[in-house]
Image (cartoon, rainbow, N blue to C red; front, side):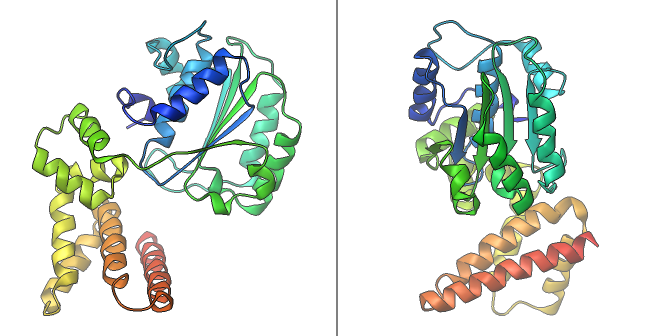
Length: 296
């Protein structure tokens, strides 16, 4: 689902109000960095902010804009005043955020605004940039053009160059509360409170993960993997069933998520901090190696 198709934002009210105040006071910073865990609505927020800016509202009281034609132009990439760099393709696969992609920003900035007062650059997520790309982007931020707003997301702010961070207004987004999570899931069509509660626990409050778990047989697949990993008496045939499950490409995303989360849960209760850190690193390498093997 495209971030612009997300229903009305029910969380992050403080962050939204701060942006709205800056806009109405004509004190809009040129670069906004939204940081926080995956799946809490960072992309949904920056796309809604882009829609808001490109609509040129006068003395607005909300960032929610009803403009279907503008939304469609943003989604299909035909609006001339916005550039979007995403670290994921339409299938959710990771795309390298390299220097060639960052150079597209310079090409975009040479153009003049056509339909809107502002030009907008979305980078989702900036912490996926490699070193060369980050250095190239830093040079852009050092001399930002007027009426250009950069809307950036990141999952791990520690991966971002301090010199980039210092040139951004950093917005630390909190995980969704359980009440907000329930509201969004009900707005998404999930009515069963017990199911929503299970999804909240298994997703750690991540909407992306919760919606993935809710899709098709994914929740059953997750629970099967959890049962298998926690069963010390598991048989060879049960392990082979898991291998068969993971071998089906359409299941790989949920299998990877379940393995990563459940292996982490098993290791975090296994001893000292040093031992846990070692186990977590081994889990991460295991998942990375598994993905490489699967893709090849």
